[in-house]
Image (tube, rainbow, N blue to C red; front, side, top):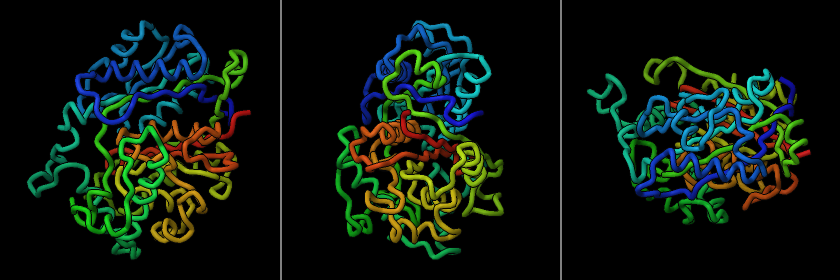
Length: 377
């Protein structure tokens, strides 16, 4: 696929936090309406709907339920399951479908309500290892963090730097769910969850919905879309092994995903101005920095404290607060913040930013997807 042939034409989302009494279909519809309004198009132009199923409760034919609530009968669509990697995965598939002539205007959306609804999917036992006390995702990420510390000397303060950066950026974001400053001292004192991870290393639990509109650059121009953001590259990578079976814990298939995206975009890490990295737990961006080639193997922790991920750093990261502080919704908010950075409308705008890389990952680093965005032309 040619770089820039597809664009993100519109973005939309609900408020993040608690939506007591709201179902996930309702949250999806609200986000999609916002995205269509942002693109300046009517819903009748949409002929594809790609939806990530709600993590907290799987529903069969869920995509059709969302389409029905919108009053649409799309040509193609459905529900994707790549866990947290699904949002960029769906954007990639939408772009490919548009290029293949299978659709012209696609909506990609996700909504969930684990904060006021069910948290069962988050707290459930992790397969047969429940007999050893392995419940919830945090145990797997804690194992990865401990291995990274043992192999590469990564420190708690380096994990803390990721959390502090997210919380600092969220202070300037009026949409963020958690707008409370975090100091290194407060981080060190925060409650342990599963060693070495503490409460402030973990993402939020959030209700909400988010959506984007994808179309060809040519169609966006014909429709007069005000600020279409070109998709320069995308990629995916997946590992089939559960955490306890992996021969390697400190590198992931994010490397393959990023390589595909960089090749498609004709870019390299040195060409990226801003990053939105999946941060369900603080160890994840550190590993992603290494897998993507921004830091040498084992040096991701040193990168976040040395070369810098803050506004004046080498790679400003998670400028809206990420999953740690903006919303725990898995992944789409990172894409939306990437679009805002490219438009120049972000609350914590990186001056002169012309390229943005976004990562999504799912399971316990099982699945990975990468998106590279450019500035509107």
